[in-house]
Image 1 (tube, rainbow, N blue to C red):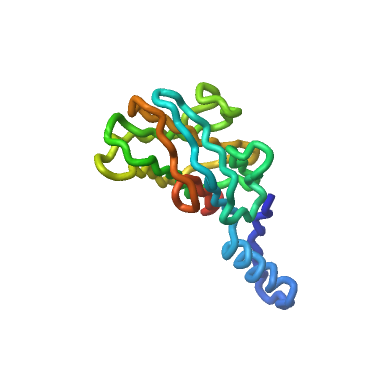
Image 2: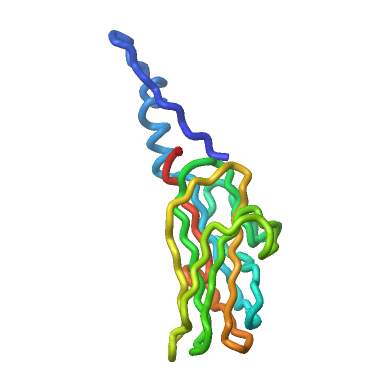
Length: 180
Protein backbone atom coordinates (compact mmCIF):
# COMPACT_ATOMS: atom_id res chain seq x y z
CA UNK A 1 0.00 0.00 0.00
CA UNK A 2 1.34 3.36 -0.98
CA UNK A 3 1.22 5.90 1.80
CA UNK A 4 -0.35 9.19 0.81
CA UNK A 5 1.94 11.84 2.33
CA UNK A 6 0.22 14.11 4.85
CA UNK A 7 0.16 17.82 4.19
CA UNK A 8 2.66 19.92 6.12
CA UNK A 9 2.21 23.45 7.37
CA UNK A 10 4.57 26.05 8.75
CA UNK A 11 3.89 28.36 11.65
CA UNK A 12 4.65 32.06 11.44
CA UNK A 13 8.25 32.62 12.49
CA UNK A 14 9.09 28.90 12.47
CA UNK A 15 12.59 27.97 11.39
CA UNK A 16 12.51 26.08 8.10
CA UNK A 17 14.52 22.87 8.36
CA UNK A 18 15.61 20.58 5.54
CA UNK A 19 13.55 17.74 7.00
CA UNK A 20 10.37 19.80 7.21
CA UNK A 21 10.88 21.31 3.75
CA UNK A 22 11.41 17.81 2.31
CA UNK A 23 8.25 16.58 4.05
CA UNK A 24 6.30 19.60 2.77
CA UNK A 25 7.44 19.48 -0.85
CA UNK A 26 9.65 16.63 -2.03
CA UNK A 27 7.78 13.72 -0.41
CA UNK A 28 4.32 14.72 -1.76
CA UNK A 29 5.77 15.53 -5.19
CA UNK A 30 7.57 12.17 -5.34
CA UNK A 31 4.26 10.45 -4.58
CA UNK A 32 2.36 12.45 -7.20
CA UNK A 33 5.04 11.81 -9.84
CA UNK A 34 4.67 8.04 -9.36
CA UNK A 35 1.16 7.39 -7.98
CA UNK A 36 -0.37 3.94 -7.50
CA UNK A 37 -1.10 2.56 -10.98
CA UNK A 38 -1.28 -0.73 -12.81
CA UNK A 39 -1.50 -1.73 -16.46
CA UNK A 40 -2.22 -5.39 -17.27
CA UNK A 41 -2.81 -7.29 -20.49
CA UNK A 42 -3.32 -10.75 -21.95
CA UNK A 43 -0.25 -12.14 -23.68
CA UNK A 44 -2.03 -15.02 -25.41
CA UNK A 45 -5.19 -15.32 -27.48
CA UNK A 46 -8.39 -16.11 -25.54
CA UNK A 47 -11.16 -18.18 -27.14
CA UNK A 48 -14.64 -16.85 -26.32
CA UNK A 49 -17.57 -19.19 -27.12
CA UNK A 50 -20.70 -17.49 -28.46
CA UNK A 51 -23.21 -16.47 -25.78
CA UNK A 52 -20.88 -17.33 -22.86
CA UNK A 53 -19.46 -14.78 -20.42
CA UNK A 54 -15.69 -15.37 -20.08
CA UNK A 55 -13.35 -14.04 -17.39
CA UNK A 56 -10.28 -12.42 -18.94
CA UNK A 57 -6.98 -13.42 -17.28
CA UNK A 58 -4.10 -10.95 -17.43
CA UNK A 59 -0.74 -12.69 -17.53
CA UNK A 60 1.25 -9.63 -18.58
CA UNK A 61 2.02 -6.30 -16.91
CA UNK A 62 3.33 -3.05 -18.34
CA UNK A 63 3.68 -1.62 -14.80
CA UNK A 64 2.40 -2.09 -11.26
CA UNK A 65 3.60 0.48 -8.73
CA UNK A 66 1.41 -0.65 -5.80
CA UNK A 67 1.30 -4.49 -5.96
CA UNK A 68 -2.26 -4.46 -7.33
CA UNK A 69 -1.85 -7.46 -9.64
CA UNK A 70 -0.26 -10.90 -9.70
CA UNK A 71 0.45 -12.81 -12.90
CA UNK A 72 0.32 -16.13 -10.99
CA UNK A 73 -2.34 -15.82 -8.23
CA UNK A 74 -5.79 -14.66 -9.41
CA UNK A 75 -4.34 -13.09 -12.59
CA UNK A 76 -7.77 -11.78 -13.61
CA UNK A 77 -7.88 -9.45 -10.57
CA UNK A 78 -6.76 -5.95 -9.86
CA UNK A 79 -6.87 -5.37 -6.10
CA UNK A 80 -6.80 -1.83 -4.72
CA UNK A 81 -4.30 -1.18 -1.93
CA UNK A 82 -4.44 2.63 -1.81
CA UNK A 83 -8.00 4.02 -1.63
CA UNK A 84 -9.02 7.02 -3.69
CA UNK A 85 -10.28 8.24 -7.03
CA UNK A 86 -8.92 6.23 -10.00
CA UNK A 87 -8.92 6.64 -13.75
CA UNK A 88 -9.95 3.23 -15.11
CA UNK A 89 -9.51 2.02 -18.69
CA UNK A 90 -10.65 -1.34 -20.06
CA UNK A 91 -10.28 -2.57 -23.61
CA UNK A 92 -10.39 -5.68 -25.80
CA UNK A 93 -10.04 -6.48 -29.49
CA UNK A 94 -11.96 -9.32 -31.16
CA UNK A 95 -10.91 -11.02 -34.38
CA UNK A 96 -12.73 -10.14 -37.60
CA UNK A 97 -16.34 -11.39 -37.71
CA UNK A 98 -19.33 -9.30 -38.82
CA UNK A 99 -22.17 -10.87 -36.80
CA UNK A 100 -23.62 -10.11 -33.36
CA UNK A 101 -22.28 -7.84 -30.64
CA UNK A 102 -19.27 -7.70 -28.33
CA UNK A 103 -19.42 -6.88 -24.63
CA UNK A 104 -17.12 -5.95 -21.75
CA UNK A 105 -18.38 -6.10 -18.17
CA UNK A 106 -16.33 -4.76 -15.24
CA UNK A 107 -17.31 -6.37 -11.93
CA UNK A 108 -16.48 -5.55 -8.32
CA UNK A 109 -15.60 -8.38 -5.89
CA UNK A 110 -16.99 -11.10 -8.17
CA UNK A 111 -14.54 -13.83 -7.18
CA UNK A 112 -14.20 -14.94 -10.81
CA UNK A 113 -17.96 -15.41 -11.35
CA UNK A 114 -19.84 -13.42 -13.99
CA UNK A 115 -22.95 -13.54 -11.77
CA UNK A 116 -21.34 -12.61 -8.42
CA UNK A 117 -20.30 -9.26 -6.99
CA UNK A 118 -21.53 -6.07 -8.62
CA UNK A 119 -21.52 -4.85 -12.20
CA UNK A 120 -19.82 -1.45 -12.34
CA UNK A 121 -20.06 -0.82 -16.08
CA UNK A 122 -20.99 -2.75 -19.20
CA UNK A 123 -20.39 -1.75 -22.78
CA UNK A 124 -22.02 -3.48 -25.79
CA UNK A 125 -21.13 -2.67 -29.37
CA UNK A 126 -22.13 -4.27 -32.66
CA UNK A 127 -19.50 -6.21 -34.58
CA UNK A 128 -17.55 -4.25 -37.16
CA UNK A 129 -17.89 -5.65 -40.67
CA UNK A 130 -14.57 -6.48 -42.35
CA UNK A 131 -12.40 -5.43 -39.42
CA UNK A 132 -11.48 -6.36 -35.86
CA UNK A 133 -13.94 -5.08 -33.26
CA UNK A 134 -12.23 -2.97 -30.59
CA UNK A 135 -14.13 -2.17 -27.38
CA UNK A 136 -12.90 0.44 -24.93
CA UNK A 137 -14.16 2.50 -22.02
CA UNK A 138 -12.37 4.98 -19.75
CA UNK A 139 -13.94 6.59 -16.68
CA UNK A 140 -13.21 7.79 -13.13
CA UNK A 141 -14.27 5.74 -10.13
CA UNK A 142 -13.86 5.77 -6.34
CA UNK A 143 -12.04 2.62 -5.19
CA UNK A 144 -11.74 1.23 -1.67
CA UNK A 145 -8.74 -0.63 -0.27
CA UNK A 146 -9.22 -4.40 -0.50
CA UNK A 147 -11.75 -4.32 -3.36
CA UNK A 148 -10.89 -6.30 -6.46
CA UNK A 149 -11.99 -5.76 -10.04
CA UNK A 150 -12.34 -8.31 -12.86
CA UNK A 151 -13.21 -7.97 -16.54
CA UNK A 152 -15.58 -10.32 -18.36
CA UNK A 153 -16.38 -10.50 -22.05
CA UNK A 154 -19.27 -11.88 -24.07
CA UNK A 155 -19.90 -12.13 -27.82
CA UNK A 156 -22.84 -13.32 -29.94
CA UNK A 157 -21.36 -14.13 -33.34
CA UNK A 158 -22.81 -17.65 -33.47
CA UNK A 159 -19.29 -19.17 -33.34
CA UNK A 160 -16.30 -19.12 -31.02
CA UNK A 161 -14.15 -16.00 -31.53
CA UNK A 162 -10.72 -15.05 -30.26
CA UNK A 163 -9.73 -12.01 -28.28
CA UNK A 164 -6.42 -10.69 -29.58
CA UNK A 165 -3.56 -10.33 -27.12
CA UNK A 166 -0.81 -7.87 -26.33
CA UNK A 167 -0.13 -4.59 -24.60
CA UNK A 168 -2.85 -2.01 -25.33
CA UNK A 169 -4.88 -4.69 -27.15
CA UNK A 170 -6.76 -6.58 -24.40
CA UNK A 171 -6.28 -5.28 -20.86
CA UNK A 172 -7.05 -2.85 -18.05
CA UNK A 173 -5.40 0.12 -16.39
CA UNK A 174 -6.05 1.75 -13.02
CA UNK A 175 -4.33 5.05 -12.15
CA UNK A 176 -4.72 6.85 -8.79
CA UNK A 177 -5.87 10.46 -9.24
CA UNK A 178 -6.39 11.66 -5.69
CA UNK A 179 -8.28 11.21 -2.46
CA UNK A 180 -12.05 11.23 -2.37
